[in-house]
Image (cartoon, rainbow, N blue to C red):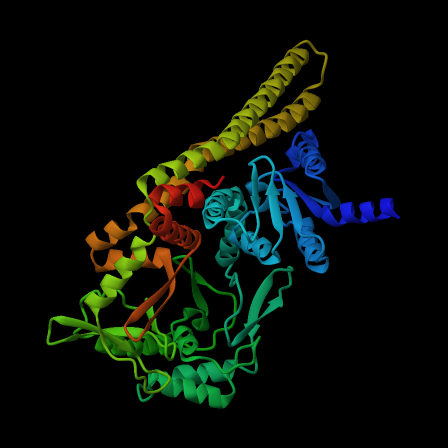
Length: 516
């Protein structure tokens, strides 16, 4: 009985985990130096940490097949098994390809171990550790840029063939074409309503709000949700050239193969009305307001807009689109001061800043070594192939191999050399730029307050758009949310300030940033 109780206690204290390993090319899998190394490292780590491995997942990505089937399977497994709350993966860029992956893993609430980086992340981790991890995630995203570029090329190719490359707007629907490619065709239900919508607005007798009300009465709804279309959606449709039979894609205009719903003349008439009304609204507002379109009213959710009073004072107020709002006007200087105060939360102690930069450089040292090792391997492979080509050329001259066989093998080996050259350039580019992104993010956060104070209105707005999201104004107080990873930096800096006030600055640095 005592032995059984001891075994139960041991089993209860043993963490149960899944392993995830990934390589980004078929060549890595074939050469066998990446997946086996990752699995061995993770298995050894689990053994030393008394962690029981219950499942292992491996993904091999290629340029033609970029999906991660086993990553999705792993996520489903962790959701179904609440007793398995540990994930082992070699390092950051093996787990994440983008910010969506980061959010997916974070929502699972699992404890993630990165043995090669010496990092363990959980819900209880310090915000400074989460911030450092966020920087690494952003840098790991560079690994999928080539895959995204291929997708963009495919969409441009469809556009050049006259095929609308993406989801059909209201009035059309997506259907498979004769050659298997998705095309758009007229939707018999919504197309007549869209056509009448253009005709109504072209008369100039109806406002955007009036036209929106009429198309709702006609039954125009979103396809997926079935909800009535919004006024912003109607405005976007009135600006969409696709309904004329031609369309714009990535700055270029193409002649479409789909059936138009309106004439070019009707579309031009609608644009004239839209432009005139826009110019009327902007009249007297030539000044570029710093916070235009950035802040919402916390009472009703409508946007805050700006206007000039007494020809020199700028005030912001709620648009009141959802009805009368009691939020009073606010001077631009007040918003400016509170935005500046919010950005000052990103600034950290200079000494701490240097610590973080050094830590980032140290964390990337392994990456640089791996890039250099990969370049050396690829260069050796290229040289080996070249020796084969040279030797076979001599054999061809001596009559030991046929001309046709020589040409076939030379073409095959040249293709492999090109693959090596491409991979070498990719590793060199990653090696040159890997640190830059993380350091730039830190520098921007460190200097955001000063940059904001010295910039003109347009640049202030650009800076705030990059750093912040969901800004709301209510009863004299501006509430902001920082975008990732600046939110973690602000949280950590605030924690350090609170600890520093209570225990002294040195204690704050050690406890919040350096830990044990």
